[in-house]
Image: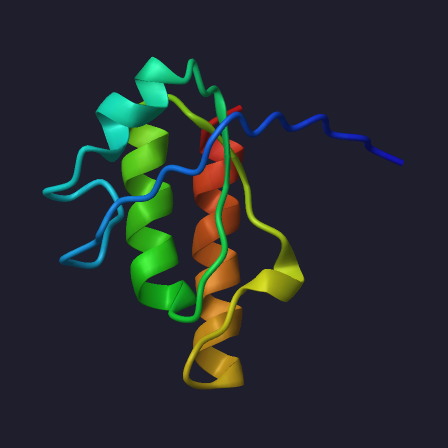
Length: 94
């Protein structure tokens, strides 16, 4: 069993205009200010928004956690393909 301690001092959020949460947002600055090292990603468009955010987070050297039951996609086939791609990203990050 893995236990993760998470401290929330205050609520921060960013508005996401495109597919990645990092694109044209201050998210990178905010995460650096909070000394974040690991991101937990979830979302409805796993094969688009979560995938692009995961890729951008990987390029910024963040560790990623993507719970399997916290991702949605248009079809089961698309979700399966997304999982395969994400596994590649996660394995490359180790």
